[in-house]
Length: 220
Image (tube, one colour):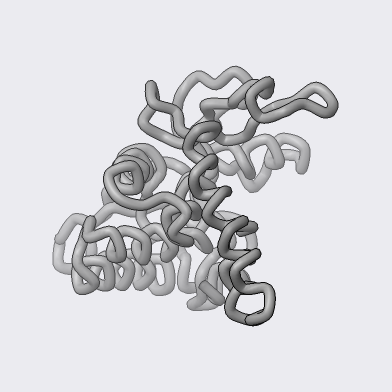
C-alpha cells in the first residue's frame, strides 16, 4: 500500500514527482530482499522485532496469508517471482469465492482453523477469523493480479468468479439465499466441499459464514 501511495503521489504532486518515484523504486528493490521466502516460495507474513530493530535483524514469520497477493496486484513484485506467489496463493489459499486468511500447516505463531463455528463463544470464533477462515473481499484481487501477470485469461477469471459468486448468492442447498439475503457473506469456511446442482453437476463450494450482505465483500 505504501508503494502504491508513492506512485499515486508522483502523479498528483508533479513538482515532487521524481522524489516519490525514487522512493518507490528503492522500496521495490529492497522489498524481496527482506520478504521473499525462498524455501516456501512465498512472501513472509511479517518481520517481527523486539523494539526498534532494522529489517536485517528482524525475525521473519513464514506463515502464508492472503496479504501476499497485494504486492503482485500493485506491481511491487513482478515477473517470475510474482508468478510463484500466484502459484502458492492458488494452491494454498484459493477457495471458491474467497482466499484463506491462513494456509493450512503448522505455524510457529498461529494455529490453522478450517471452520468458523458460528455457535461458539466470541473468543473461540475470533481465533479462526484471521487463521484459516476464507475472506471474500480479497478474492477478486487474486484474479486481477493473475490476469495482469498472464497466469490466466480475463475470460477464464471472469467465468470462475461468476460461478463461485453465483453459488454464494443463490445456493439453495446451504440456505445462502435465505440467510444472506441473496448477497455476499462476510467470510466462508476454509474447507472446500463438493455439492451437486439440480441437474446433478458437481461444483466446489465453501460454506458462507459471518454476517450477510457484507459491504466489503460486495464492494470489491
